[in-house]
Image 1 (tube, helix red, strand yellow):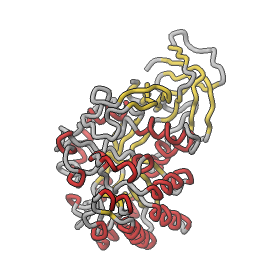
Image 2 (image 1 turned 90 degrees about the vertical axis):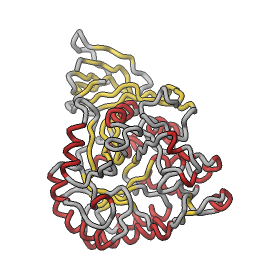
Image 3 (image 1 turned 60 degrees about the horizontal axis):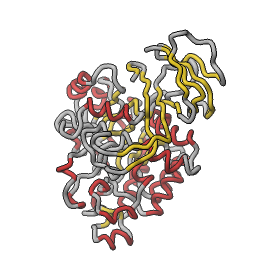
Image 4 (image 1 turned 120 degrees about the vertical axis):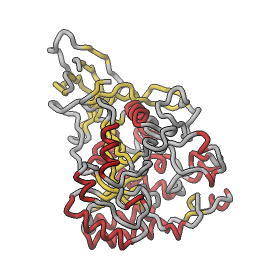
Length: 422
């Protein structure tokens, strides 16, 4: 575990709202002291000049896919752990769409046993419906007792009768239900957000009302059941408006947007890069602007990475035929920092809150802080280090990202975890 002193590092603590330059002493897995200048430390302490570096709580991934079990060629739990730590992510909530899905306690228990020791901490979402088919709810109480973090199918549940049953049953269990809001009938065959650019591209359009209509319907059910719900992958301006209205009425909801929907829009899709085939699709520029504002103001509580690995063969197809999703555990922090913090659009604390503190609150877990006496679950981030994104520099087994082959600025250079100093 050792003893380390970081001199003149920029310390971010979104829990207390502090952003300061200080010395910080970490020993035996705990934060021992934070002070403008620390001089009294054990002789064996490693001292590091940390000017220009950022030290803050580990990041939390709200929902990610694992290839294991069933699709280990995409990602294993071990490679997922490595990619997470390389990106400063110390906690990951895994979606239940494994093979077989996490729709019963035995599958959940097998996965928990596969979790490598002394690693980034995995949470597991339990499936809300059997086989993720949206027709019959799972044994929610049994999955809850088996320590799933919450429930989701990671896809729309179109049967609102079943959904109401789930929400009513979940209320006393005290665990969140994460829902994807999409009306599949309104979406049709759409693969790109409907608008002028979708017409020019020749790709079938997915109208914004496919999300807005689904959110509106979900909010009506939540208003009756009062269960805690997290709305995943919000992607439209109208979606942000509906969530803001619902929160003003006191509905027990949280919401998240994925990092890619904040950085990119339909304007980047002229290349037909299959790594930009996402679900929901990237928004139009006005959607992206509303999402950015929603994050800044807190209407959208958290930013999810929504890490979704696919093999080269799976993604090297026509845009409309490509599976939806992209990796991002190693890329989200540097690209978001460069785009929003360096430009002054968001404060550093805002970004870190949305990537660490808020995701844990959405999961109804205590937030990570950076204060004296707390466990050292921290990331040291160099916002100036440049590196090339390629198969040799990525820890993820899959490399399906828009930034493959590009140079980016910013990198997590060290991670402290209570069980593993790495």
